[in-house]
Length: 356
Image 1 (cartoon, rainbow, N blue to C red):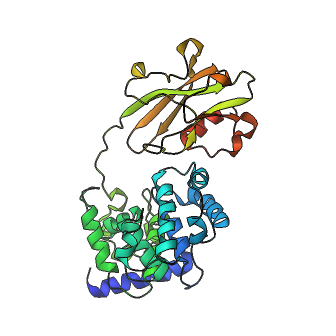
Image 2 (tube, one colour):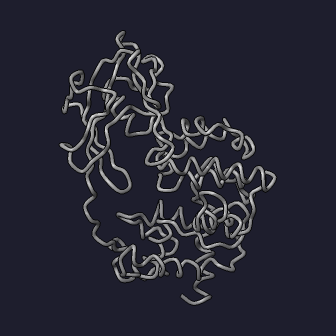
Image 3 (cartoon, rainbow, N blue to C red):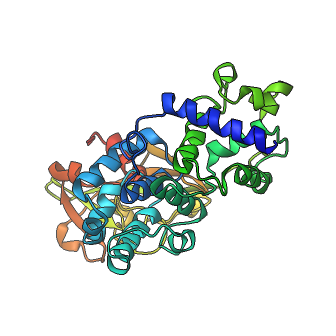
């Protein structure tokens, strides 16, 4: 694509965006500059998470912590509780760390420099570029999955993902870097085009503003791109999840997980270790097997980034006086809806009929 075509492409895309941009609570209206705090918060939440899933969490956080200084003063348990269900919990821990750095070291103002942004906790290449472009309207190469798909089709890149990522990023950079004409809107227009027109399946090529410039459309291969390598089967893990009541059947045993590891610091139901073979899963010492009833019909499945998990229900009644291990505590069943459980635990709570 030559410079004249690149200029035309940006003009067409921005005109389309002005008429068709998605309404989102973190976006500024008209050409007003976005709030860096809202931009940062939304971008962290949107990592590997869909827009519809993020919106209620974003609104809850903004209402509770309307500024980065407010968030910096929050308790970690409070933040983690309100994040529960959104997944990828390291994001929430880094969210609080980043808020504290911005509040304490930058006077509550996010920097607009790429290197300074990337040095903040939880901010990588993509997020630093997104904040720089969207919040500060400065040229930046903002490349997410939507933009990769648009670039792959625009230039008919047949090399499969993820091997083609560097090439797709370079193609996007040629259209973004050094361009001062509404860089924030341009970045968001590419994302919106990928989300609404240049979709993974059945792309709406006939109404695409870039149709005349798209090599994949000209070659009749738009829907086949981008190609992807065949994924290897996910590793499987198994274990037990426990529903333990006290002698009065009014309190449920919960567990605050250790500060390191998967779901670190989150409150959930007790579980055994998660192992490749269910026969190797050992019940927690707190529950002698003589008092434990395993019901494999009470089972949940959950997919994490690197493995699939199957947990079978274990049921017991425990004398409150016998509870001695750190991290375990009793909680009134009637107050269970107030707990922000991670999704894997919420699934079992729902299975047991204690839906929120």
